Image (tube, rainbow, N blue to C red):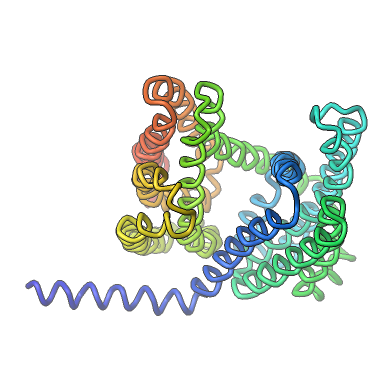
Length: 430
């Protein structure tokens, strides 16, 4: 029985690997990891080129940009992924795609105008350099938003290899040009290089859509499609915002209650590692959501797809968790230095939460794929409330470790909350 069990596991594992290769999983995973490494590497280069004050300013600018992008995108990229993954005819998908682009252009330029007003009146920061640079830095917003919509449309069409190639080439191009700019003109050169490279890289995103763009000329914007997109994107925007609060509130509340910046640095590095590990199951999610969306009308096939998806995710998340628990504690002092050994304890706690997140994510993504997006919003809202309350209680009691405990408990609660909604909404249908 023991030998049979091992052989059976090997067969299952082999089948998962084979299907992953065919679906483009490893191609996309490699691109995601490359993006993370490239982004991390660029920060290392910049710390050797720019003074510490400018590195701090860049971090602030990037933090602002993340918020502005969320406001400008308004959840439309997620909406395009869902609505263009269904079995609607091609013309219908093109109407949704064009409406999404149009709406995002209005929201993007609206955000840029507001940011210009705030920066011109020195309302964004007490640092005058940040206010001055933000006017230029924020010009990236319309291009990045459009790029994200293109990627969502390609993902909806399951163009996995095209997505990975686009992301890899464009990201490396942006990093190289911005670093060269920093070498020549310091902070001003970095931001100018970043802006120029972002604009030029947009051509790479639109290359796979040559034929589609020609057809878009003849597509008329429909008010009903606009209403449909805005209705769906409202929940999608809320989901994204709540998720950002869940993963970032621990650090913010810790910094408010606790002035131990060393422990916050340990916690931040542990989070960085967990976020990198999340790319592995997230890659599977990127492949599976469009498939689930296409099957939303056939509940029998959807059930089979979900069950297969659930099995693969459990195997994947278990392997990643066990391997990481054994190997990464040895790598932390090598990569970050001996002074960061304190991050190991935080990492082990956060890894439990990572495992819990991987367990419930298939149900969460199935609800999303079926269009039950408002319930995904409710799930994130409940988790956000739980996380916020736990952070206040546990951080007061345990310091920064309380943030790690809170994250772990929140994601465990996510298993129970997702299971409740999943059974309530689709068990009878499945």
